Image (cartoon, rainbow, N blue to C red; front, side, top):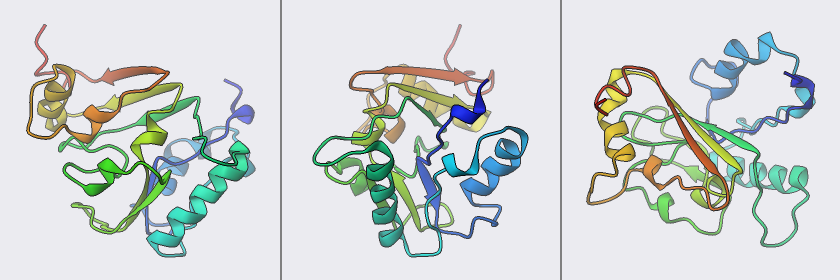
Length: 186
C-alpha cells in the first residue's frame, strides 16, 4: 500500500480536543496513523478548537480548497469508510434528524447528537452519496437488527440514516462480522 499517496478526511468529528479518546482523530492515530506512513500534511483534520458552526464552515472551506472547487460542484471522494451505530446512524447523521434533509451544505454542525458528546460536525448526505466508493465496516451483535433492516430493506416509518447512503455514481459495499450479520439468515 502506498500510504504516502493517501489524502485523509473526516466524515464526522466530535467537538473535543484531538487528544481526547472520544476524538475520531485520536482513534485514527492510535489504530492507523501511528502505524503507517501517511504524511501529516495529507491528513485534513477539522479544527476542534472552535464551536461546531465555525468548525463545519472551516472544514467545508478546507474541502473546497483541497478539491479545487468553485461553485455548485460537490467534492467527490474516491473512498468513504463509514461505520454505523446500533440505531442505524452513520457519520453524525442520526435517525429523524433534520440534517438528513440537508441539501446545500457539505459539512454541517450537530448540536444535539443523542450520544455523547452532543456537539459534532458531519458530512451531509449529498456529499456522502457523491463518493466513488462507500464501504460500511460493521461489527457487533448490537448492530444486527439495524443491519437486517437496512440490508433487507424492511419498511420503516422513516429510513435509517445508513439506509439513505446510496451513491449516485458509485459503489456501495458492506463488510460485516459474523455478529453484525447474525440476523440476515443464510
